[in-house]
Image (tube, rainbow, N blue to C red; front, side, top):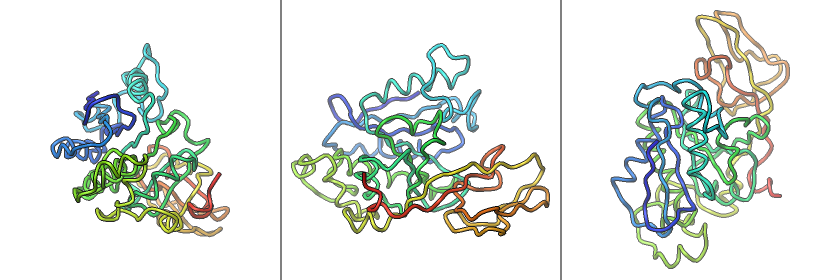
Length: 294
């Protein structure tokens, strides 16, 4: 595990990349930020987690790291021990975790639930959708308090790496670590006025404008069930993620056998080969972000 820091002091903000070794967008974004070495208002911890899996170009070496949290220092697998050490590094931090997917090129945010951190950070990110995981988050880093995940785009693509870099800067601006999401000038004094003040300029770097208008533009979906797939040699998915599937509509196939929806749902993280034993997940659309207040 690589651990880097921008700025002096004890970081309360962290970015995690490389949880999965076949998702290079996050490590590329972190490397680009380290090379840029921006002046930060608050110190930031930058972590590249599963170096062994990244080197091998595989999702994990022994166990899916994003199903292994909170981990075990004496665990039987590399990832079980790594999960424990990563949790220790993240103690006391607000966290952005970078991922990529085979399901959609459009970036979106993921949170265990719409809490104060999601409401404060997500409007400053260049996303239009937020996915709640709740009880389906078992073993995932997203259960760590004050953690937001972003799916940056299609796995292995240059666009996902570019999106990841932009989203990192937007997150750091939203948390007051950068004065603005772009290199454009904004005084550190103004950013220091409030933890999330700097994110107001996220739109200058392609971000979503802050405030109620941004919140009303972000659709919120909630996972309800995994969608299993049977053993087969060839899989197909016929639907678009986050677009409604009606009861009776076909949504996927395995070796030519088609599957139709028993009830209407919204597909999320659904793709032919993204998961070994799932097509993805069924979700409900539950509103927009400014309606999901505690």
